[in-house]
Amino acid sequence: MSDARKGELAASLAEVEKRIAAACESAGRARDEVKLLAVTKTFPALDAALLADLGALDLAENRDQEAGAKAEEVAGLRPDARIRWHMVGSLQRNKAKSVVRWADEVQSVDSERLAEALAKATKSALDSGQRDHPLDVLIQVSLDDDPKRGGIRLSEVSHLAERIAHVGDIRLRGLMAVAPLGTDPAEAFGKLARASERLREEHPNAREISAGMSNDLEQAITHGSTCVRVGTALLGGRGLASP
Image (cartoon, rainbow, N blue to C red; front, top):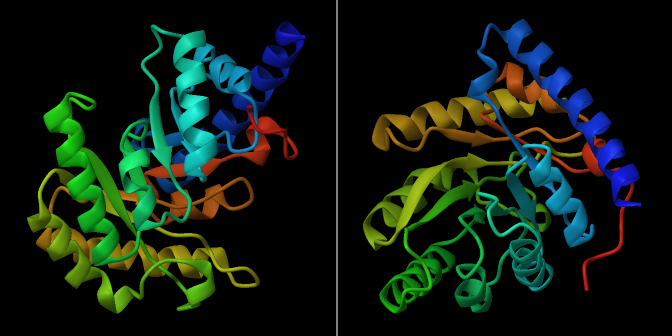
């Protein structure tokens, strides 16, 4: 079964890579400017391990409870794989201590209080030896100001970025956003690109733009995305969570 699944994943990965490469060429960008995040939420740890075998070493989850157990299981399955785990889902402050145990990066920071909680948890993990490097974070922004969707208003980015820069033990790497449903993703991603440009004027190392998923990665890459988050196009329909 695992051989058959690996074949499925290899074919899907090749197709996604082809799309990314074509989008980069069309935009006049180098392929290595865009990182592929394989979103493994609801899929078993074996799928994550097989993706790592195929060279997809940046894996993303959106629920801490599922991700922590899965990351531990994958570490047992592939102890030598240099996997980086990314948290891309909404995160509550009370999960900060848990998430820093497994995540290399949190892409969904949307408040000062969450940033402070992550910084405190990271410091504790560094002091105790649970981590050996600071936590990378992205600010999640809302491109339509819908509070239900998550993310802060574009007008609030500068203030939160300044707070993150001074809180310690977390490193601001850029912005993350989801194109609003029912709108032109190209327009949304253009807005995000302009926000990123303004952010880099104050924080030159915050260069990452995490934007684009299975259905709109081409438009995101055209507008400067450095990280696309792909689940369905890689893994298929929703799977069963790892126990």
